[in-house]
Structure formats: C-alpha cells, structure tokens
Image (cartoon, rainbow, N blue to C red):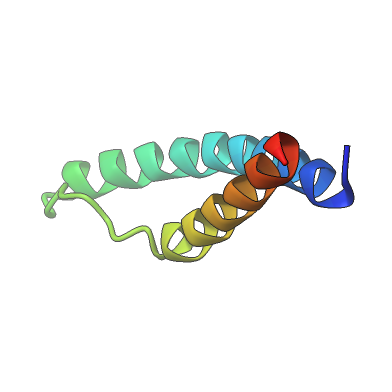
Length: 68
C-alpha cells in the first residue's frame, strides 16, 4: 500500500468517528431548539464542504494507484 492509500484509510476512519460525534451533538441541538419553540430545521454542516472534497480526491487517487 502506498502512503496515500494509508492516509485515505486513516482519514475515512477519522471521518466516521467525527460523524458519529457530530450527529450526537446535532441531535441534542435539534431537540433543544424544538423544546424552546424554535425552528427545528436542518443546520448547515459547513464541515462537510471541507471534508467531502478532500475524501473524494484522496479516494480517487488511491483507486488510481491501486489499479495502476
């Protein structure tokens, strides 16, 4: 395995852990907002704008290296 492939796997695992932690907090925030009579609409997840492009690029590079 190349260093890029190892980094990709580590980042995917870190993303899964991050997503679990963020969703727990997000669910609490939504419940709190609804209990206070506020709007319980979806919050903007700005972190995804950063995380997804990085993961997609690394996955594409890793797949290219794997099949090369």
